[in-house]
Length: 128
Image: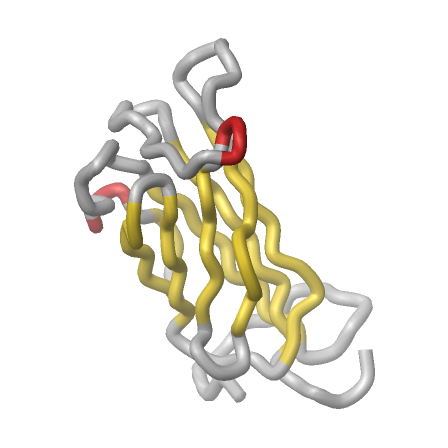
């Protein structure tokens, strides 16, 4: 369970923790820490088109993990999704993949290219 101080958010469920963030992909290079917005996580480029997000704390469960792409180009050339298992209870990780056409592809470095995410975590294993 997480042991940080969390501030109240109105929720229909108990012990909810909202972790939101974004970062700028940097082509085939590492994600610049200066581009990261949000707190409570780190992000690294794991391989071409694949980003690993690691939370600071473990959570027994979660309601949802959402990812979206802000893209400079009007053309739809990229497509981000969650890839693989979301593991917030042991490894504190999830992966974000850019896989247009099913192939992992880097997203070009651009001031207007960003990946946004939101984790709706549960800091309890009891109830809903």
